[in-house]
Length: 286
Ligand code: R5P
Image 1 (tube, rainbow, N blue to C red):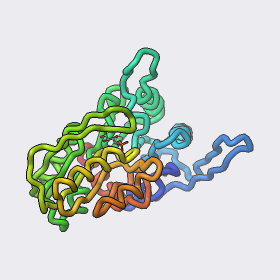
Image 2: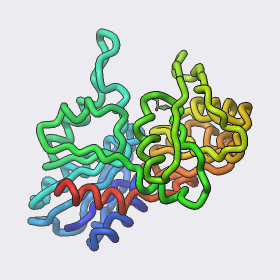
Image 3: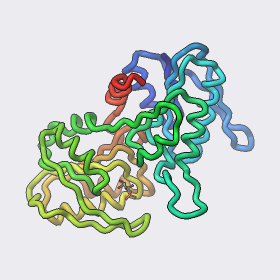
Image 4: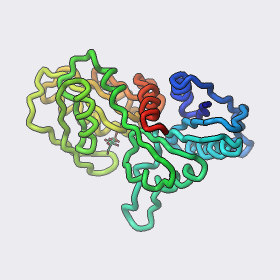
């Protein structure tokens, strides 16, 4: 087995390779004078089981991932599994208005063409899985988060919206604590309205967990509301920290701590998904 790393996932790919006891392939990368990407895999992958680890955050990473998928396939491996830790464009998993593309379908078709199996991590909507004709597994990360906060005496795991309540419940279950979710309504892509449930959180330690932190609007509003209600410590976590603009800094200013996973690498990627991902992939024999 050998791991091929997209440039967006170098550290995570190395950790995954350590968990499975394999090497990471060497890749030559440079830009053509017109800015287009050139890459070449230097290892001989013929007959190997290859795991490509590449987050598709931003168009450059999407293009690189597609080139890597083809480069690996051209090497004639035995199997190719595409692990996409953050699956970009998955929010457009359906047509909301006439004339729109189904973006996640486009990328899934392309991955499907080259890979034998696809693995995503907490993809925005599992509808995307149905666009693949190959085995497509979506891994939900809960153990790594629960164990990261194991010594923080958390009283409630909080989801900032209804959609994340199952994740909050599972993490709370693993931490032997309680959970609740906030009633959130999105006004537009930059603003949301929130209503807290009628629970006494005075003096309690809270762990807010979301799937994605993008502009930070959701988390910042949630932290402010929970503070107003008298919460003690407020820890903020998420699977994917996209941190648009200065949101990482703004969240750190108001939360007691900010720790996201390494599906998207940032200064706040303090929780590695590598071990949990590898264990869950082994469990599904993918
Ligand atoms: C929404 O469905 C997601 O779970 C996140 O709450 C959302 O994507 C966060 O976005 P932002 O950080 O821009 O509020």
